[in-house]
Image 1 (cartoon, helix red, strand yellow):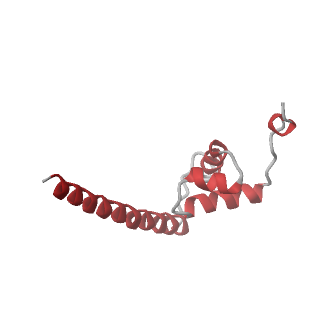
Image 2 (image 1 turned 60 degrees about the horizontal axis):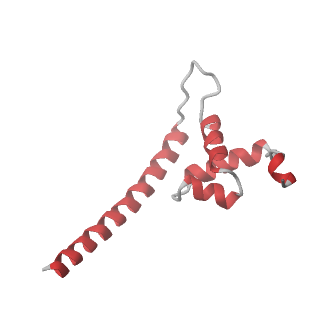
Amino acid sequence: MDQEKQKPKIYSAEFRESSVKLAIGSNQPIAQTAKDLGVNPNTLHTWINKYSQPKEPNKVVRTDEHLYEELKRLKKEIVLLTEERDLLKKAAAYFAKEQR
């Protein structure tokens, strides 16, 4: 077996945190971000869960900045989904016309 597959890679806390910010802030799938970073997608999901959890388990911390970032991400997602929906509508209309 290959030696690299046997040894788990160790990533710095800074790399993990910046990877989480990139994955959350990006409008591409998390799996694609993980691939671009050379990280296993499951590992990136684990980091996202870890770094987006409040530091104190009994206290929910949601800052305005966190909410602003989530709002930005959701707006990007809405734009993408609207474009995809419109494209599918056009394709459906085209194929419906072709069948007549």
